[in-house]
Structure formats: structure tokens, C-alpha cells
Image 1 (cartoon, rainbow, N blue to C red):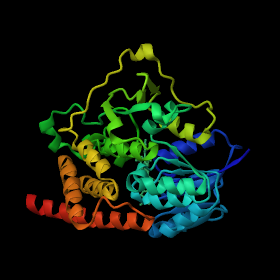
Image 2 (cartoon, rainbow, N blue to C red):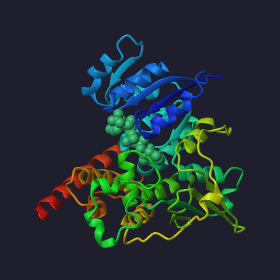
Image 3 (cartoon, rainbow, N blue to C red):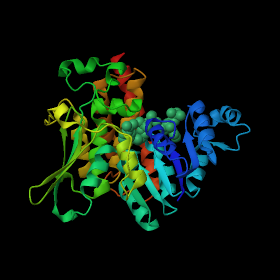
Length: 394
Ligand code: NDP
């Protein structure tokens, strides 16, 4: 049976890995929508190759280039936020949510409204609006399938299990590019240093988030929201080899681990073929060759993002939206060279403090609009605080 699929964030790392799997089964899929940002060349080339119904760039100023690149192809083109939402409203059997950042929230939400499967790579959706998103899925009979490798691993370890028997969930972290740097040198880390991930080949933003462990902080919150597991049962360990992605501990003491090569096509393929398991073109793990798998507790002085994630989970409500927005602004400023690597976490913490004096962070986010407004306010506050930091250090 041919399945209709849409990919949001098609030009990115997850989007391209998804297309790689779809390309291997030319009669299995019909591509509805492909979306991207500024990488028009890739978007147009994929839209032509897969005969997409529509190609959308989120940037209005990129529309002329996209129109020109797809002239005569029969692929419809559109641009802007509304166009993204309209693309998400087009019926598809399976939608990949792989836009980076909170920008992925609204298209994912709309994708759920047609009772389809939403493969969720965009972890920011669960961090900013977890309870809302899960309720929306239930209301529309839609299925959310986790694509983050750790959450896909937990999802797989839980097949056939009773959630009441789950004692703990452990998600692993590679520790990122700066894992073994002396603590006192971290403030000197450059963009290039933070982008040199030891195991995974990912987009730039998530690679830097891995180095700061903000990625793992988001994933702790994502675990709580997706699986409904209380924070004290969720833990993370540093595992430099990135072979074990997560472990689930049960009340009888058993610990079920999920192992696989660090290749996102594992988790994408599982979500694509779920509930079946199909062959995937990924490297097989050779345990004898690996010889050693190491695990160690993360140092929260080195990774303050983990402590902040615990505070956010305890607060609930709008704290996740503020945390994520402030993290995105801090990351923008680090990428721009305005603040140091070690200034990102204090900026996020200061934004959480400032916002907690302005709004009641514990209040539940009761609509998508409330989430987007909280996200906006937090961005404004984080930008002001970043500016103040820069002025102080000038
Ligand atoms: P990339 O940066 O590689 O790709 C992001 C995609 O989103 C691109 O298609 C980009 O377009 C598009 N995009 C960027 N900004 C916007 C915007 N404001 N509105 C709409 N589209 C936009 O990211 P990744 O593929 O690495 O990550 C995507 C998501 O998946 C993130 O949430 C990440 O945390 C998550 N994830 C990623 C993993 C990985 O291995 N990469 C692993 C697990 C989760 P363009 O490039 O054309 O400008």
C-alpha cells in the first residue's frame, strides 16, 4: 500500500535521513509536502525527485528562488508560517516533524488534527507544550511516534510492558564535544569546538546543545511528557560510545537496554514502519569489536542545564516554554559570538527567574496561543538579558 507522507524540516539532518529511507522504497510512498528554510537548492531538488505535491519554505524572501527552481515541475510552491500550517493541514498518513526549535510546534500540532501518525523529532514540541500536544493526539486519535533515539529506545523497551512496573528510565548522553575538556577551559570553547561531536552527525544547533547538555536537559523533560513518568524516575548517564541509547528498569530489577549504531535512521525507520520492524541500512553493532561500554554519572557543575531541567520539570506549566525559548536565544548569541559557551546556562536561569516574577509559571498552558505567547515573552526577556550581559562585559 502506498502511504502519503509529509516531511517538515526536509532539508535538515533528520529530514534528509528520512528521505534516504523513503528513496529506497520508490513505490511505497507518495510525498505530499516537503518544507525547508533557506536551503532552497536542496528543497527544490528533493521536491522534484519525489514528485511532492507542494514545497514550502518558511521564509517569504526565499519564495522567488523556490518558484524559479521548481518552474515547470508541477510542484506547487508556497512560503511563510501560514503556508507551513496549510501544508500540515493536507492529509497524509505519516508526518515527520523535524523543524528545529519551537518553530516546529504549530505545524506538528496541525499535523495531529487529521488523526495521523506524527513522527516527532522536534523535541521542543514536547518541552514547550507536552500536555497540550499529548491531549491533542488523544482527541484526534492520532499517534505520536518518538524519533529522538533515546525516546525511540525507551518506546521499544516498553513494548508489551506494564507502565506500573517501570521503576526507572535512564537515557544516555555522549557528553558532546567538550566532555573531556578541563572545567576551567570550558569558557574558552569556540563555536568550532562545540560543533565537533564525537559520534553523531547532526544539525549544528543540536550538536552545540549536546556539548552544553541542553539537548539532554530537553530530553529529560521530553521523557516526562511523552511517557508520563515522574521526574524522580528519570535519569541520565554519560555513555561515550553512544551505542546504548536508553535503559528501562522494572520492578523485578530487570534493566532492558536498547543498543544500536549511532545512526538516526534506526529511530526514523522504527517510526516510519511502526508497528512493524523492517530491515534498515544501518551498521550492525559488533560487541566483541567494541569490547568496552562505559557509563558514568554526569557532573552537574560542568552541565548546569541538567539541574535547570530538574527545576523545570518540578515547576511544570509554562516553565518548559520559557526554558526552551531562553535556550534558543542563548544559543543564537553563542553562535553569533556575543556570549561565551559557559554563559548560556546562566542566561537561561536568569530568564526563568525574571519570567517567574512576571507570570505564574506553574499555570497550565491551556492553548497553543498561550504557549506561543509565553515563548515570545521569554525570547524578549532573554534577548534583553543577553544584551545586558554583553554591555557589562564590553
Ligand atoms: P537541522 O538544523 O539540520 O534542520 C532543521 C530543519 O528545519 C531544516 O529543514 C531547516 O531549513 C528548517 N528550519 C530552520 N528554521 C526553521 C523555521 N524557523 N521554520 C521552519 N523551518 C525551519 O536540524 P536537525 O535535523 O538536526 O534537527 C531537527 C529536529 O530534530 C530538532 O528539533 C532536533 O532537536 C531534533 N533531533 C535531531 C537529531 C539529529 O540527529 N539531527 C536527533 C534527535 C532529534 P533550512 O536548513 O533549509 O534552512
